[in-house]
Structures are given as structure tokens and as C-alpha cells.
Length: 57
Image (cartoon, rainbow, N blue to C red; front, top):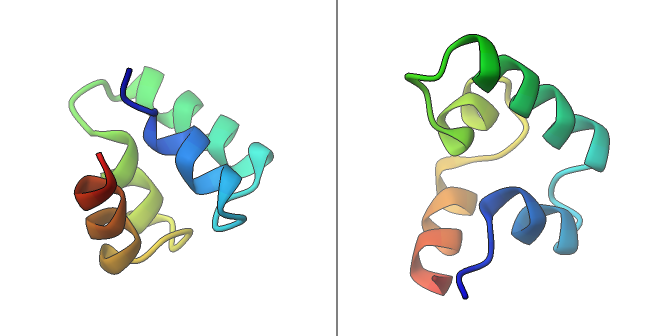
């Protein structure tokens, strides 16, 4: 089973649990945006972090 991006980033200490919760709340309000997209916009992760997750999965 594929790991979810939030859990992956938390496990690597790139993202805190609180930051992941905040992203999920924003995502509930705007379901058009993806988790990684919101995390980048908030400055929590970089494009490189997202690319690493994609290549990992």
C-alpha cells in the first residue's frame, strides 16, 4: 500500500503533525488543491521534497 504524503513527510521530520493537520483543514475548504501543493504554498516543503515523495512511491 502506498504511503500518504503527509505521513511520509512527518516520518522524515520534514513536516510536523500540526502542519499536516493545518494542510488537511485547508484542503477540506478547497478540495481542488492537493496536499503537496498546499504544503509548498505555505512554505512547509519544497518542490524537491515533493519530488522525493513521488519517486519514493
